[in-house]
Structure formats: C-alpha cells, structure tokens
Image (cartoon, rainbow, N blue to C red; front, side):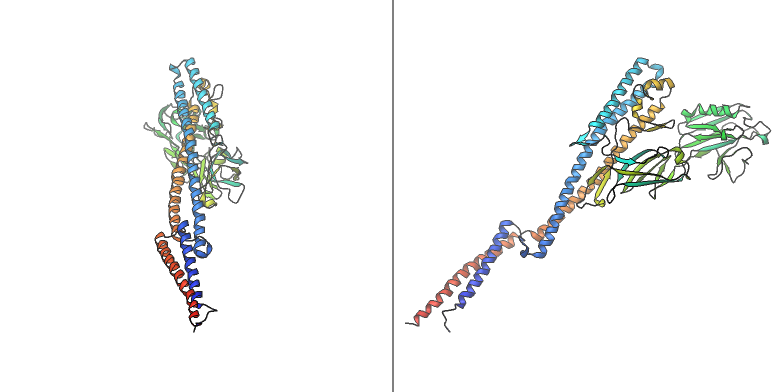
Length: 517
C-alpha cells in the first residue's frame, strides 16, 4: 500500500533521530561537566542524597578549619604562658637568694626586689597584650563571669568549662556533705589517776613530732605545763607542719596535736621515743569521727569514743556540686563534666561544717566556645575558660586566713622581700610563687590536653569523614568517563545512521511518481 500524505517511515526515523540526538546531548553534557547528575531529572533520588552529602562535606570542611584556628589560638596562648613561667621561676630564684639573709646585704636584697618588681610588671604586661587577631587571650576576657559568690563560703573560684546551650546562665549549688579534717591527736590533761597535777607533764619525756614538712624531737621536762608544751610545739611548726593547742583552751582538758593543712595528704604523728615511766599517763588518742572533743570529766579511756594511736591523717572535704559528687582535696573541690568544670577553694568554716546551708552562685557568661563539629549542638562544641594571668589574679594563696596574690610581692606590699626579712619568714613568698607556677602550668597542661585529646583527634576524625563522604558523593554524582565515552560513541553512530535512514524514508515518497507515468 503506497501513500504520500503520511510518510510513516519518515516519522519513525525522525522520532529515533530525536531520541539519539537527546542521548548524544546528554553524553556531551556529562563529559563536559564531569557530572553524572546535572539536573533533577537525571536522577532525583541521587540528587537528593548527593546534595545532602555536599552539605555535610561543606560543614565538615569548615569544622576542620575551626579546629585549625583553635589550635593556632592555643599555640599563641601557650607561647605567652611559657614566658610567664620563665619569669615566675626567676622570681622564685630571687626570693630563695634573698632568704639567705645571713650572707646578703640590704643593697643586694633591694636589687633583687627591683628585679622581682620588673618581672611582675612584665607578667602583667604579657597578660594584657597577648592577642590573636584582636582577641585578648590572657587578660581575663576569655574567663567566665560569676555572680553571687560569698567569701564566707568560697574563697576562690576557677571556672574551667561551662556550656550555655539552652540557657543564659548556670546556677551552681555547692553542698558540703562531709567535712574537711586535719590530722588530730589528743593528750589528756587529767592526771588524777596517776597522782599528778592536771595539765602538766608527769615525767621527763622525749617525743618525736612528724608532719608533712619534716620531723623533730622535743624534750619535755617533768612538771612542764601544757601551755608551755603548746608553745614549744608551735615554735617548730614551720619545720614539722604540726601545730598544737589546749583542748577547749583549758590545760586541764589536755592538748590537741594537729596538722597545719587539711586533707588526706596531711598527717600528724607524735610518738614517745624514751621508755614511759610507770603510771605517767602518757597516752595519745584519736577521736571517733562522731565523738565530741574531750573535756574534763569525759572518760578518755572509753573505747567507744577513742582509739589509742600515735598517728592520724586528715580528710578531704566531700561536696555535691549540682548533684555531682565533687573531687575533694583538702578544702578544695573540683568537678569536670562536659557541661561544667570548676575548681573551688572553700572557706575553712564552710568546708568543715556540713550543717551549713549550701552555697550558691551563678555563671552568667564569658569563656571561649569552640565549634568543633559540623552541626551546631552542645555535643559538638567545647568550652574552656582562660583566667587572667595578671599579677593581681595569679598565685592566690591563703596567708593567715587572707587570700594574697603575686602582686603582694612588689616593693612596699605585704610580702615584699624587706617585710619577709623583717619577719624572718619567706614561706609566704614561696607559697604564692609556687601556686602561681602551678596555676600557669595547670593552664598550659589543660590547654595542651585540649589540643591533643580534643582538637587533634577531632581533626583526624573529621578528615576521615571528609574523605569517605567525598568518595561516596563522587560515586553517586560524578560521571564515569569510560562509560560515558562509550555511550557517546554509540549515540554518534545512531545519530549518523538515523540521518541516513531519514533520507531514505523521504526518498520513498518520490517513487509514487513512477506510477503516474
């Protein structure tokens, strides 16, 4: 059957030619862009997942940059802290030299004081000028802001981490549940059973006193009053770390020997080294934790209250901070959790009386927040506080119940070399400088641990995720050039063949003219 109005072979050839042309254009597009998916119709599901992977890759890439920036900030901060440590070490060396008063003239001590003043000024200058891109590092700008701290409860607070996600302030509740204790040994003043006078040594006695600072022997004479014994013990306190007092202020009640410091590391040991005389009533006791302090009339030998010993250790304070059991060290407590990290030096009265109302204060802001993950959430952020290292804030130490800082070592201040020489006691200077060195070293260690255990591991983890996600996205979205080249050749051949077939189909209609003669 021959028709001329409708050329069916030509229509079919045109349709096939159009399809091969579209396929040819698709292959050319993929080869020119390198992508298998260039628009949604190429692979709708593949486009969705590849775009999500692209977002993840972009966020991870930025998180890696954030970590690198954080490492640079920490490196800059640690460089400044290294210089401060060197200055503190030089201050301590100068103080140790000045303590040699028997071989150092006033002029030499004055020269040492000038060097100490200069070093302290340099420490404050470094604290105020250490910056990273305009960001102050050591002047307290990166420290946390607190409100409501009472000195009668908390002598010193150091906030190391706090997360403000979902809140504008953090309330901190400190509840002492077990008191800090010193090592205590008791000697009864009741000599009635031995036929002697209350509150006196019955016979010549040689005792060995041992504490954290050292050991000394002391000879007590027969008839020596307990008040003079206390005075003799206290004259050796700097050498032994042990002090003494009359029980309840009454010689007839007895003597308490106790460690100067609180905590499980503090101890007192008092031991008689000569052979006791018969009936001299020399027996030391340790109180049961729940027993009252003995007084005249209390049965010292009651085993339910007392234990016959020659040594006793102190106890660390135990406290709950926001319901978390804190780590105690003497009268200091600390916690370190993802949402809150702090170190508190408690007031002595507060740390030794669990019946007192819990202390509360607020952390209202501050600190430095590092975004380390690809998503903005508390789990992918790290908080760290960097305290001021100015001399007015560094080395806080309780000296005679008063908190004193590195600035107190400057000329004319409480702990200057001249004042220490007048008192013949340089121990306060040493304690303050040692605490300052410890604070700077701990800060450096904390930042180093943060860089090593958080930033570096986070960076490696993110880089691994970046590699794997990039590879996965490539598999989904990138063009396979070997396959696409093969498909291009096929499309080119079909396009050429389709053109030839269309030409032949158009020529078939002309054959009708032969029928018309």
